[in-house]
Length: 483
Image (cartoon, rainbow, N blue to C red):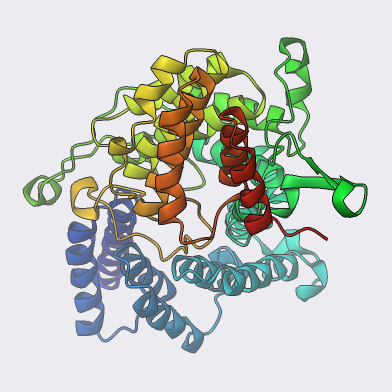
């Protein structure tokens, strides 16, 4: 009968909807093999039935390629949406909003944050068009949109994506403003708190590479002329430790400004929200196929976090916490965070191992425990400067093409020089000038003449302490440009 046919068609549509929801769930859990198989079944069924792919299926295919690291293929699939007429307002968010947002996220994965920012701004413009009463025939958006759509607002998600993109564009002050808006909705997201802290750190210290390479800060000025000319040297060449920890100023950190105090508050919240004991074992193909659920942790508006991602976030938050505490001259807290970082996981990335040892060494020197600091500053501790475990070990999709240009140290050789320099500082503080001088000579030889200002200052200090005034003068003549 007609009713039976209509009921059968309704059941078929419902089955298709449930299959799509299953694919979405698999993608959020990063079960990409199962999602690919399920999506292929849905697409094959649609083609066999003579139906064209709708926006949902195209978006799912594009998201699958994005998570697999095939960013250009994801763009190619997503562009198929251009041939589909826009759905009605009752369908959900504007097609333009989803299209431009997805293009922005994919281009960020390609390492093109400027292009990504343009697409995300277009997505925000589309939300304004969709919410404009003049865009409907009746002039009233409330009369033409269902209640479930009125209660959904994609603007926080767009702000989040735009904030992260601006952070990659080295515009941390603007990124901070967008992420702060998201905080009103997703205050339980540890990743959001970490990104806010990174904005504060980037505002505080934006030009680390230039500060390290600059030699102009060594000389404050000159006095006299001719043979009576005297050079006034600076007491330090970096002002990153210009703040001092004050327990009474803890309340100041609650104000939403990109300061180190607010960064400390953000990092404390991030570490509180992150669970400590998590499983980092990835599911096998058989487990995924049988429907075994991985251990997941909510992190809206992003997908739920897996165990490996929780560990990665905790390691990042600990490294940032140690740095912020050092900048605020809270050396005991910095040492605690650095030591916790080094034992956070058996296979923490090489970059964080390096930072953990450097921060622990600096904190111990400031606390007067030079002998303990020397153990952390051994150059043999420097390994491969990887940022994350391999995709195979972590069960993750391939990494984004985010450029590390401007990172310091950026290579293993440079990291070895940094460790030797810091170890030389420790020996100098302990009064072992010969050891310090020999280590600094190694740094000097390997630098190929491009000496950071900190190394030049230390070399001059050591030569003066050893009574080699002529050698010190020679260093000044060769390495400092006087005007």
